[in-house]
Every structure is written in C-alpha cells, then in structure tokens.
Image 1 (cartoon, helix red, strand yellow):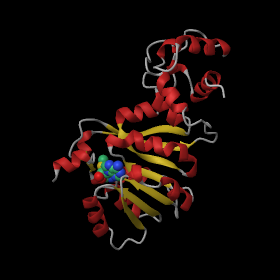
Image 2 (cartoon, protein in one colour; image 1 turned 60 degrees about the vertical axis):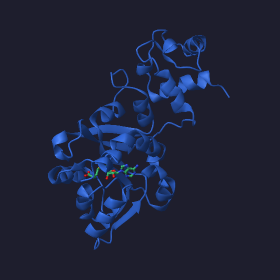
Image 3 (cartoon, protein in one colour; image 1 turned 90 degrees about the horizontal axis):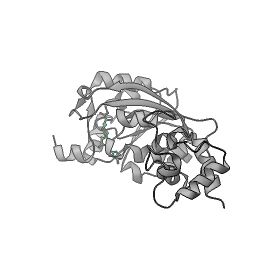
Image 4 (cartoon, helix red, strand yellow; image 1 turned 180 degrees about the vertical axis):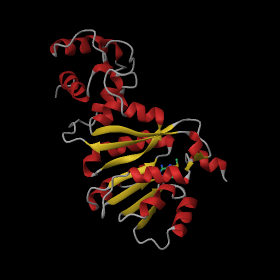
Length: 260
Ligand code: SAM
C-alpha cells in the first residue's frame, strides 16, 4: 500500500458488492462504447466487461494500468490509456465512437474539472453515470431556490438532466474516505443551452456573494449599477437573487449585460 500515491491520485477502492450494484446501474445496451475514468483496480470495470460493450479506461497511475493489463489480459473488449483524464483527447474519442456512455468512480480532487470538461460534449454521449463526493453530487443536482444551488448546478443543468442514484458511505471503500459519496446519472438535455465561452465565468461571478441580492452578489468586474440596469431592463424584481435563476434566466441576464 502506497499511502502517498493513494492520496495524490484520490484512490479509494470500492468493495465488490457495491461495485457490482453501481456497474449494474449503467444503462449501457449491447454494443455500446463505454469510457471509464479512473478504473483503479478494476472494481467497476470487471462487472462492466462481462457485458457486451467496448470499454476504454483512462487511468493516470501506471501501477494500476499494469495491474489491469494483467487482470484483463484475455478480454478483447478492454482498452486502457495511461493518462491524466484532463490531458486525454476527449473530443477525438467522442468523434471516433458513436455516443458512448461515460462512467467512473471519479477521483474527488479533480471530479468537478472532469464534469466541467464533459458537459459541453454531453450531447455526443448517451450520458454519465458515476460517483463523486455526496456534497458535490448535491450541488450538481440542485434545483433553483434550494440551498445547494450554485454555479456548478447551472453549468451542469445547462447541458444535463440530473439525478442522484445512490448514496454510498465511507465503509464501502478501502481506504475509507472522510466524506460520503453518491452516484448520479447525467443525461443530455434535448435542448442544451447554447452558451458562449465566458458565460460560466459570468455565472460564477454572480454567485460570489450568494446570500445578497443579485445587484450585490457579483464579484469584481461588474458594478452594482450595471446589474441594476439589467434587472430593470428584464423587468425582474429588485430583490431577485442568483440562486433563483435557471440557466436560461442567467443567459437572458448575460445577453443584456454583455451586448456584442
Ligand atoms: N474505479 C476504482 C474503484 O471504484 O474502486 C477506483 C476509483 S478511485 C476513487 C479514482 C481512480 O482515478 C484511481 O484509480 C486514480 O488513480 C484515478 N485517477 C486519479 N486522478 C486521475 C486523473 N486525473 N485521470 C485519470 N485517472 C485518475
């Protein structure tokens, strides 16, 4: 056991019964391509490979990669790439595969970066079913006007229908993490938001002082008068808060505040 390695790569390995349950939740059909992020020692992979799917796994840790190459030597539907997922050419993979499923028990230190990378391309997949820290899943799946709703919820719900599937306690991992986990299903929205590149920076800024009214909640780069004028132009109540705005409403605000 290499503790430093496990911490560095966010390695908490699932027990067999839980891995089996979670793998069973992936709605992949016969012949589907599946992209697994962070297979580790193959807890989920093993159960997925029993199905008639074509699986590509991306794993950063070369020790895990070597282990899996041995473990799944005879499996012709198993491919593995030894890479940091954030360096992986996701676009090229999606171009080469017809609507794959994306899955994985994500390393917690980079889970939001991975989700952010995936969302604008979610329409090229059948969806994501996988695990993150419970608190992150709650933020991702939060509805407007709820306490967990924030910029991450806006980012994801701009592209995805979201659902928490299972809550998983620390006792199901080795080593035990200090946090609870959850699996979630993110499927592509029929009408994803067509947002410009800097839209989500704008949304993040709007949540800087989340408890205040929208006119006062923006971070640096936006002044109160500018926001007040936009709220007035949109005929919204002056008391409106960022947490009340759906992705569509945010886009309306963006379009008024950032004219071409
Ligand atoms: N899937 C295994 C399981 O459920 O038992 C392992 C899950 S563990 C929480 C996260 C896995 O992601 C580890 O195997 C770790 O080495 C790998 N990992 C960490 N950072 C990564 C990255 N940036 N790109 C790809 N894999 C990564």
